[in-house]
Length: 516
Image (tube, one colour):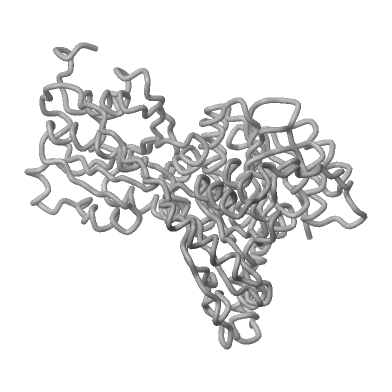
């Protein structure tokens, strides 16, 4: 399309996103976004993906950003659309995922009338976005769109609010991409100071997050581990490269007292793309700050500030070996018990190299995490912000970002019901996702937390809020109703057959794992 043919702000904006490298738009649009909807017909480089709920839209954009390393766009309808998508935008913020949110608003002259859908969109978006702007004209919308992409590339949600009249107004043309500021290398003085502190410490530890939990960062971390530095990652990271031949850092424990015990004796805590650890929740009589009392805390690399290279430079400063061979270990077959760990053992047997696992299985997720450590090399996407319901949408986005990789979504039956609409989008897009639902018919994690918080013994009313077995959900019927092939596993043998079959074919599939 030539500049002369760009007759609306919506056309110019979409072409600006396309020129800036945005290739995907996850959408649940409404009336105020219709100009943008039709502009997608004239922007072949941006693929539209419909979701039936905004939480699926934002979660899919999160998964796409984690795997593609660049932003997708979301298309949301006014304040309620942002509100419906906020839980997974919260998770995306904690994962530092790049996302560009396009939010339609009432036309400028209509906004003052306080029509039923009027709300403070900027205030809502500001709680989960690092960059929020509102366009006042079509020209400004185009300029801001280019800036939004650059802002998103810094590891955040960038939200651009678009009054409807800015999209139907004339526009002069496509905006030019804006360069993304690159993080400065960690100063040599910082490297030297951390190296000196490590040499003087009895039990030094490095805590990782961000890009440092992917291949290059872990290779450097393995070198540091070889010279006596304990390496750990946060309990929940956006993306962790793991599997056979890869260095496996320890993982921060979820429960505070376990974390405190695990960290006991550490006299130097070095932070690499993360912050000092705290407990997920406060509990009566239990610590919230997890750093051992008296331990020195130093920052090697700020969040998003070149952690892998800083780790490599630190390894050089400490005279670490140039590389570390990580021996591969044989996979153990499933044991006699039928539980979540069994599922992980069976999955590990069939997981193809390069697979991606999106984990929202809560209590079942950790046993699977532990038993897949020596599976083929893969990526593990975690529940970074704690708002359950991200597992299926993140898997959808990851599959569309990496169509040549098998994606596995691990979810509980409770967590899965937050965003079951994702299954429809998986079927519509023929996304190569195997969804494994752990059906224990209860909010298991809440049963655990009930005792830990000292809230007392549950009576009938409390128990009714923690059980989801009356009536029981039938995930086979749910999946089939959304257009997916589905099956149920009651033991390791049936699960093995179902997973083997799913790995042999492309496209969406669901397995319900019956765990009583």
